[in-house]
Length: 92
Image (cartoon, rainbow, N blue to C red):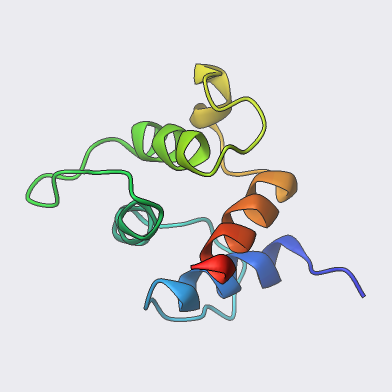
């Protein structure tokens, strides 16, 4: 059975040491910063950058789809992007 977007988000949260969520929500800035760290995208944790910047860096570092497409970072991750991120975190 294929994983849902919520399943993938929770798998990613757990892989970076964050808590699983029961309700369907996007990633917080703190969770995105933890994902950035896990995939090797350097962010200043004293003052977190915008979510869109962190999403773009994550997408670029996991080679997910159009990582250079700035518009894709303005919205939450799509399922294919979540699958690529989860696969990267599983391999580490």
